Image (tube, rainbow, N blue to C red; front, side, top):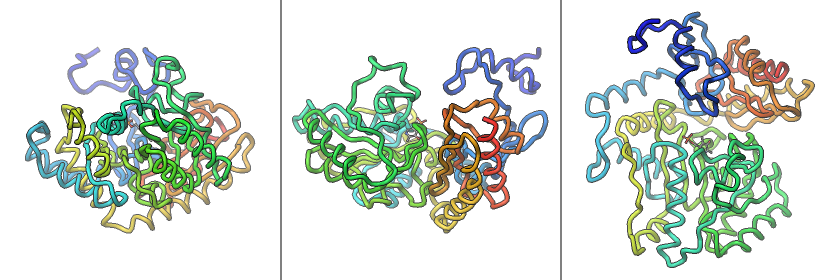
Length: 431
Ligand SMILES: *Cc1c(COP(=O)(O)O)cnc(C)c1O
């Protein structure tokens, strides 16, 4: 075997070293399922090493690569920024990419969100959101308000605070029951508006008001917790109940932000402004890791009036200029085009292409919203078989639990979309 420090590993050598040394998401060590080796990616295609096979990406790299790969405008922004500086610390220093990005986020997000904390990943942005809320109440002399309320079926990331508000059953964090902070859970939100469910939300918020710092939810679409949709009207119920009982409202828009559900942010479906909002995933168009926590003047003011009038959080790579420059370019690219029409076009393609899945044996539900298409089975999927079926159709998908879904780049053309939906159907049939 050649020196692994030298490039030019063969695919089998690479896979063997990967299996022996590299953790993959939610994976055992050594790895059991052999990953595919990607050599490059361009447009909506991933090019595999060795064979030169190309797969259409139905996942947008976990929902982030909304403009596709190797995009000239994003490459240019990265190259340009690289020539100036890839990073400088954010303590005591600032720079144009971070300032421009913060201004763009404030301008495009729901009215009232004014302050931006640039974090290094979605999970960290949720940690920051929770810290903001707890500290807000602590500063106002109400340190007892430190629990969170959410509804079941959610996903908010893999670090400790986010894990504590992920779905406590069947989710990825079941293992940590008893270790995690015990939060207040409502039932999963029904698809359609039900007054009785709204009453449950109101009742729980009122009952726990003295100990609740915040309600945190994914608005309109619950992503990794089960790819479920719910009526935006529940967001207004939460807003009213939170206001009535001195509880802050946090929207985790990490999956739904930047147009994925057909509006720029899912909060717009209900015309609700949260007190705190997290964005991530598509923020940099899938180029590199960055997330942000936005808050209102009221939240910031609460913190700043406290005994410790600062937000005690400051990651080493906070505000990374390279990521911020690409994020600005990605937002400009999105807003500079008729993105609503593009997302509508993807929605139509998904609806048409996934309709036949409803007739397949073992399929419980088919649902589409914006550029999100989901086929839910009545059984746990055979992930390896389903993935193989999709790859055979020339498409990359990552089915999980009882779900085969796609969240393709918005730039996916109609012919490629049809191939993605055919692959979802094939994966549902064979998984
Ligand atoms: C992906 C995701 C997160 C976590 O983001 P990371 O960047 O993976 O830490 C949090 N909340 C939601 C809704 C997500 O989809």
